[in-house]
Image (spheres, rainbow, N blue to C red):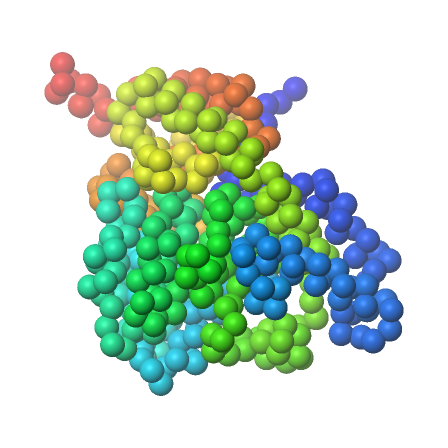
Length: 393
Ligand SMILES: *Cc1c(COP(=O)(O)O)cnc(C)c1O
């Protein structure tokens, strides 16, 4: 039997069987449009409200503060563009970080072309925003702070509660891209002073193409998709009921299993990290050692080119990634690895392995054994490594 080990759960996850099962009737018998008044439509509407409640519960939010979108990217775009528009009269300055997902960074660049000013905060060597930098960046015309909950490449969790407190004290809106953290880390929007939060179905064993934007009641935010009156007139378009039901189910399961599941993943992650760092020379762990997503490990290997390593891992049946799925295909090293201070040549040799509760210790052993072989192999062909060995003899 061919080996297949999926260690790219930060890129996307497998839809859980219970999730697919919950969605199925909404493709077949319950196909009604939720905006209609006959019973068929009412079933869709009811299912949608159920999902909204499940999501609100996991965030400590109110049901009517949950808005459905077509995914994390749309939620990020909406949060930034629509608040920028609504609050432009108050000011035109936005604060974010250098390690955000491109859905945030490219939206900020777009906003800069449309009369807004953006401060991109540096991060420390572990990938965390420094609170004193944040405080220093705040100006009288700052309208929005957008800092991700947890980084999708290196797994570092940001000091969200502290950032929220600072924003709240200054009366500035706080948005967080929680696509990686939702379902992995406990989140409470009130305790953390979060005004807007983005999440996505396919990162927590739900379907692709469905996402959430939490918008605190009272936040002025304009409609992003114009048309019908869906989503309290803020996001038009006939609702993706199967997707919404699937997301609700995935969130319900994620909430119920969080403690046990993440404890398991954390233990396996630490086993992976320990084996790699002790058995593979010239390797380093990227991201915070403890303040990191339970399922994320990200390494750099000197004298290794990331793409070759990934191709050889794939031949051994292991799916991993170098940085993020969005930047692969380009030869630029990851903006996140550069932001934590790694030089280009080291940032090129990165490997991200992200586990799920389906990952086993045997999977990790198989992966590390193959990784050792692959890295030895690649280094034996590298003139740079040869030079390095000679110099250090
Ligand atoms: C995956 C991801 C997104 C984009 O979500 P989609 O649903 O794929 O559009 C945004 N932010 C982060 C941190 C992500 O990991």
